[in-house]
Amino acid sequence: MNASRTACSLPTSRLIDKHGRSVTYLRLSITDRCNLRCRYCMPEKGVKVLGHGEILSYEELERLGRLFTGLGVRKIRITGGEPFVRKGCLEFMERLKTNNPGLDLRLTTNGVAVMPHLAGLKRLGIDGINLSLDTMDPDRFLDVTRRDRLETVLLVFHEALRMDIPLKVNSVVQVETGDEDIVQLAQLARDNSVALRFIELMPFSGKARSDLCRGESLAERLERLFPGMVEISSNDIETARKFSVPGFKGTLGIIEGESRRFCASCNKVRITPAGLLKNCLYDRGVLDLRELMRSGAEDQEIEARIIDSVRAKLVDGHKVAEQQERLCEDSMATIGG
Ligand code: SAM
Ligand code: SF4
Image (tube, rainbow, N blue to C red; front, side, top):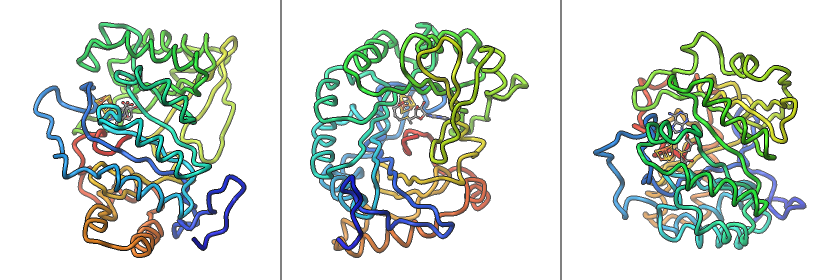
């Protein structure tokens, strides 16, 4: 390895795009399968899933983990589909953490199948869990996810807090999301030291953006619902705007993905379950890593192709979308959020 090492034992990034941004963050989607059917993400029936031979094997994923950390990635987020629907997820994460010292390893999950693995996640030193939860109302939960699993998700929330696992809660705001949903969810951040982030709905599966339908932006809505709310950070590589609210132990946040406000400081790339490298949520994939690995490419060649692909990263998501007729994916589950 010829890159210089930092104090945390990972190298400084060799992944630099033509706009001067360093890529240090990889979102690794390990499956397109899921145990929920969120309305904004998947249809109820007839979900087309990849065959076992089509998704990257754990061996291939570990190889990519090693190559990307060797190139300067410091943070990997495991996502899906639902990561824990795939057998062996915990053991894979353990190996990733052990084999890449200093790696910041995180998980995005709906929580449904996580409870039996929570102690293992704590043991391996997970650096954070993002739990997706759109409502505290059991009927609304059933309506949004088409499954009756709210209780299980809330158990995971409380158990992760008890174990001192750093926790964020992500809530997608849809047109059906009422003020009462937002206020009830906010109680999680009022009573606990967690970051609750409201996410702009992105128009996958042909759905129009809906969070603005009420004639106010998400920020305006939160300001109305939580008087005295103050913006507390504009950290360059945070994708969320963060707010404090008087009397809250935790914070509220907004992820303005659809507005694409955070592109200027974007430091991440994604890999889909089928091994496509994506420079941007909105691109169709810039490099077929599965094909490259399965054709017998050596590490050095793969590294060079990754460096070249990242260098070509476009300036923002608007530019990427302009170059395409429409989003190619049917669902966020094939990208990992
Ligand atoms: N199944 C896991 C979960 O739900 O946390 C991980 C994968 S999921 C695709 C990752 C994140 O993307 C979730 O927080 C989910 O709410 C969000 N998401 C899915 N579809 C979305 C959409 N159309 N717009 C905005 N966020 C979306
Ligand atoms: Fe599954 Fe996550 Fe998509 Fe919901 S958002 S259907 S939990 S992948």
